[in-house]
Image 1: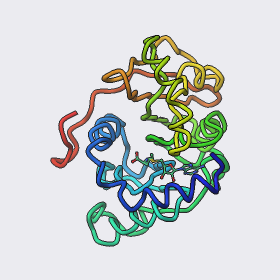
Image 2 (image 1 turned 90 degrees about the vertical axis):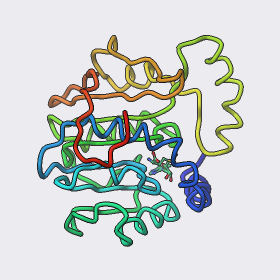
Image 3 (image 1 turned 120 degrees about the vertical axis):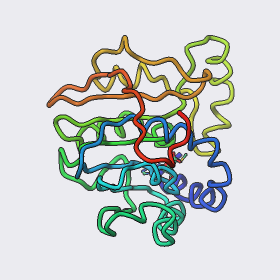
Length: 231
Ligand SMILES: C[S@@+](CC[C@H](N)C(=O)[O-])C[C@H]1O[C@@H](n2cnc3c(N)ncnc32)[C@H](O)[C@@H]1O
């Protein structure tokens, strides 16, 4: 799906995406609550969509969310403007920008945490998206991905291949292999690749160390604020 079409499709989804928030939020809460943030960390949320993740970032970090779709960003901005999320943060600590995940408008090593949820399978070039995430990540950054990836189970994998053409018409692909993606991205430690939760979604924790990126074991979720749901 081209960027122009993806943007239009997600503009349309923006109107009702949050009706399905229960499908996404528990995973977002779990993934973000395990990130060991430091005060003042700069976080980049790639493909932030309607901003479902915003309520889970601690107030002491600065969040930049980018998305291709003005319709999705509009919903995220509305949550901010109406004080549903990050109401206790200085206004300038949350920025929403229309931008392409494949050509991020940031210099190298700009962020301490890069978060990608349910986005890597929607872009036309997942490898490029990953390398952009690595590029803008600081030398000791955490890069966290939450996504559906192709199943390790042959029958499910076969089903995913079969329905992939339909999924692509709807705006995402379901045949993306996490192992291939990470291997081609030069990620080390692939033995730690987690199995899918409920056969479908995975939370992948990566740590950048200067020029290398390694898979890491997901830290235990931290109880930061009472609004976190159960992991
Ligand atoms: C399934 S939604 C996920 C939204 C959010 N991250 C979440 O987990 O709820 C995918 C998002 O990726 C965005 N997207 C797709 N292609 C993109 C691109 N090339 N650059 C930036 N955002 C993109 C879409 O506009 C959409 O908001």
